[in-house]
Image (cartoon, rainbow, N blue to C red; front, side, top):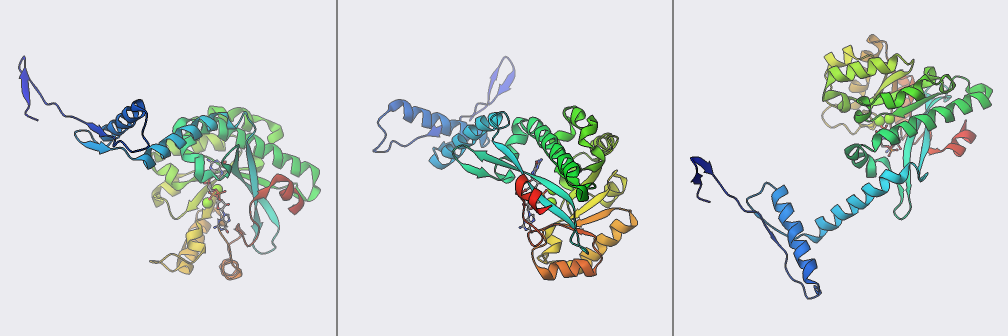
Length: 314
Ligand code: C2E
Ligand code: MG
Ligand code: MG
């Protein structure tokens, strides 16, 4: 640990050590060395100048993650992704005005995976760009088909969630949004306020470019992210989606009703439409109806379902 001088330069050496205990079942010396090596990289990753004992759990998690990463790269071309659709309804009449496309991955061995199981990974690896383009293309085509085949659905819009990573790679969406068959005027793109908070200026630029295609923009999970009111006022947006946190009445510091009233008032002043998310009980629905919330989404109205079931519902 004592620093030393070489040619007048002061150097300090630190050591990272990986420790792998030999268990009775360990028969292969190479495996023991691999475990120790893995632990040593954990020690380095943990800040260096330390020792780390091999943790089989962490090792298994990382191995599984890297396997999932390989599978994810092939998921689009292997046709393992599909979209469920959840209705967005007029809260006074119950009429379905739009649908939100929600991504699912039918993994060959792990079964059906929800976005929370793989979206982070897809963003990390960059696979989200191809996946997101597939989602937008599939959802817009599907909704255009419904509008065409069912006369009473002529105004149906489709909501597609965008990852913040996609805001930096808009060129990949260009072809889809300029295809007149996809009718961008019936497309809503959802982005969370957290996604915009990292770099609001870049967010405004990206959203403005998207709006030029004729789509509408919704802020997803509104009220729980980190965006400021000044940012909100400057964003080129059309819709606020109230986070289920306020709808469910679980907000501890602020009772939901005043918060819901405040959000509805804010949206009204900013000429934004409001969709309440996560409506699960008749009480929640009645409260929102009484407060004049125009649109809603939630398990009480309908759960997300595959395209065929959505077609029936429509
Ligand atoms: P989100 O956009 O806020 O979507 C709503 C989520 O809440 C969905 O979960 C939906 O199944 C769930 N939900 C709807 N109604 C209720 C309800 O009444 N109660 C409860 N407890 N939950 C309800 P899901 O499908 O697991 O999606 C989670 C998140 O993953 C989405 O949240 C969205 O942020 C993201 N996501 C989904 N699909 C995509 C996609 O294609 N691309 C990107 N980038 N993100 C996606
Ligand atoms: Mg959404
Ligand atoms: Mg949401």
